[in-house]
Each structure stands twice: as structure tokens, then as C-alpha cells.
Image 1: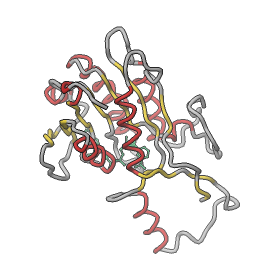
Image 2: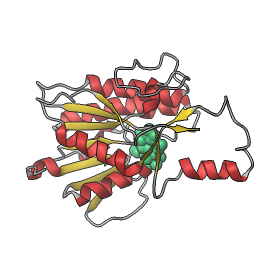
Image 3: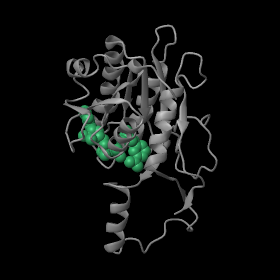
Image 4: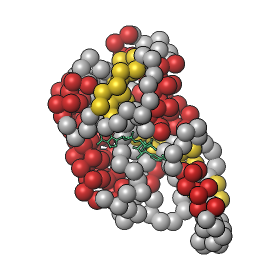
Length: 245
Ligand code: NAD
């Protein structure tokens, strides 16, 4: 895809995280100029500008989003936390702040990393499509606030104002530098906690390789135009078949 130079200036909010860093690396490969906005800096990379700040701080966001046309929002508190107020502050109020800062700064596109758990009601989903309703009883505060966050971002899509949004819904992400999924499973196995089966052993779970998740984000960003049917829509991202777990 050949894009005009100005549309290749992007910011990755949460770019110091597992998914965010993979996204940053791929964006650089594809000729984007990339700024990372995160509460921490976890690595150095030539050509990447790092700005440390909290996404709930609109002033900090506004300076980070100056001259940026495309924003990826893949920041979140750790899902394992049970801190309701933190999830509400970062995922709901923080996302409202990001939307407002994007509009004020003249950003044209916002790509949100949502989660497939927004449609999970506690029972297996096979071949689930994006027309599934949001979970009425989300499994935890993380998911509850991911639902609210996704609604905010998709409802903010406004073709007249030239502000376009889309959401990507992966489930468990694995790949190099995964800090969470595989290490947690290996730890549990070492402690002998994998000897039990919940259910009859046919429960399904979906894992996606991190590069596929990144690819989904970039495809969404590059296809997000006012005449595109993807405006304001969520998309599930998966490898192929779910795995029996
Ligand atoms: P991660 O914890 O590795 O990265 C999240 C990043 O967000 C971190 O660098 C953190 O410092 C940053 N962050 C947190 N609070 C912030 C704040 N207030 N201001 C600025 N930055 C802040 O997580 P990840 O696995 O890379 O997940 C990225 C996104 O993907 C999240 O939105 C998550 O909900 C979603 N997701 C992840 C998975 C998975 O399996 N990892 C599955 C589905 C969805």
C-alpha cells in the first residue's frame, strides 16, 4: 500500500507492552514513523520517540498526538488485577480522554485493541461472528470495562468530522516475549496445578499468534476510510480453529 507521508505518522498508546512493541516493530518495517505513549518505557528502538505519561492525562496526550494522523490504543491495566476503580479509570475514563484528545489534535483514525471476551457469556462459542451481542454478565471488571471502552470508541466514529474508528478483538495472544499467557501456564504446570480438568475436557479456547494480531491492526488502519464498511465496527482476530483446552 502506498500512503501519503502524513498518514504514516502514528502513535501507539501502550506501545511499551507485549502487543504494543510487536505493533511498533511492524509499523517501522512498513515505513511508518512511530511515537510510543506509555506510563513506562521498556525498551529503546532507533526511530521511535518515547513519551512517558498516563493516558488519563489529556494535556500529556495532546502533546504526544501533535501532527499524528493515526492512533493505536493498546494500553490496559493487567487483566489479572481485580482493581475495579483502576479498570474504570484507565479503560473507561482514559478512553474517553483519548477520544477527546484525538479529536482536539486532529487525529483521523483510532484503532482500538479490544478483546474477544466482550461477547463471552461463559459458554463455548464456535465460529462466533461480530454480530454476537455484548456479554450481559461480563466475567470480570476487566471485561466489563473492555465492553464500555469498545462502545465508546465505535460510537465516536464520525465520517462527517473525519474521525474514523475500528476495534480489533483478539483472545489469548502468544508469541515471542509473551509475559503472561505461556509463562503462567508453564508455572501452573510446574506447580502441579494442571492435573485437573474443568468440565469434560472439551472446553474451547482461542489463541492467536501475536503477528496475526498485529497484522489485523495494520490492515484495519490501512482500510479505514470514510467510504469503507469497516468504520465503527469490531473485528474478531483468530488464527483458525479454537483449541480444546
Ligand atoms: P501489556 O500489559 O503487555 O501492555 C499494556 C501496556 O499498557 C503496558 O506497557 C502498560 O504500561 C500500558 N499502560 C497501562 N496503563 C496505562 C496508562 N494509564 N497510561 C499509559 N499506558 C498504560 O498487555 P498486552 O498483552 O500487550 O495487551 C495489549 C492490549 O491487548 C490490551 O488492550 C489488552 O486488553 C488487549 N488484549 C490482550 C490479550 C492478551 O492475551 N495479551 C488478549 C486480548 C486483548
